[in-house]
Length: 387
Ligand SMILES: C[S@@+](CC[C@H](N)C(=O)[O-])C[C@H]1O[C@@H](n2cnc3c(N)ncnc32)[C@H](O)[C@@H]1O
Figure 1 (cartoon, rainbow, N blue to C red):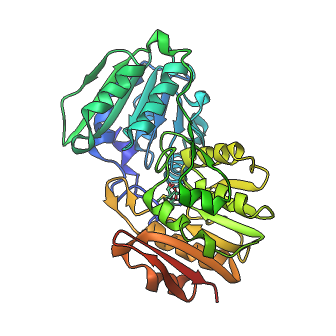
Figure 2: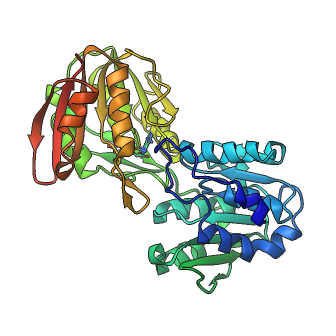
Figure 3: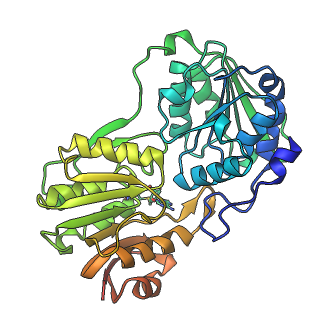
């Protein structure tokens, strides 16, 4: 196994990597050690890896005897890193990468290795998928850093799966092991995506409708609710350019803003983009629920890199400022650069951010003249005009 993990690097090296500076962490190693006997006896189709960051779990599982591995990882950036390392190791024929977290990923699985997500709802959705589609005797091994683990994680797993136990901690990581599925959960109706119709006044005014429907898969920012920053951004919508032809919701999450853009401008085509598989699945469901799916195209990519140059009149952005536990602003800066590239001359970027981040100068450099439109102690909304 050591040989298989030795070639891993925190790829790519351009600072855009999603998951920190360590390609193989103590949790990866502990998960693989705990799963070692199961992997040694695995048959084709038995092994699934969820939430791998750079490929350590995938390549480690193959090295320990798994004949093949199905992989799903939420962020397209992590997925690219996993693909890169799998290709480099010459293992692509034995690895199937799934872009979405559907039943196909876990159907019939007997060993599931999981890097614990930070959101309980994301863990719940994984557990639910496993309970519905994996083999009766599946063993799910979910590892994380002890400081990020809570008792509620055991409860979420226990609600869907059989007996749950925790391993001893090693190098500040621990693994929860859930064995077997609960028969009564096999046919339980799926809890995800959760849905709601939101009637917040700022949202209604921005959309020009009595309410806006939202759908949220487990790993999605804010869930089926309206985030405070998003609400503050929407409270300025009466000053966004009207009657635009092409609009972009950059880092769309559930796609609430994309739905608002489509509802308020019936002639507009909207692109909603996010790196997260849960987000794009949610944004598609949100667009359908609001009857605007014919005008909202949802794309999973990194910081909107696939959007065409000079293709938009309006970009609306609520950028990320967290990646796992760390405050990270590099994705936000890459999104500003994308906005500068995809806006047509005279097009506008509307951004909300945490006031202490002081993004105004960076926005002016990346896009063009930038003014503070609204400010409160927590959030600032800016308008940048493409020169
Ligand atoms: C603060 S949330 C905003 C979500 C949504 N627009 C809203 O206002 O509710 C930021 C979003 O950016 C996404 N994101 C983070 N890093 C990204 C990247 N490198 N490329 C694309 N999207 C990213 C996250 O998945 C998340 O959905």
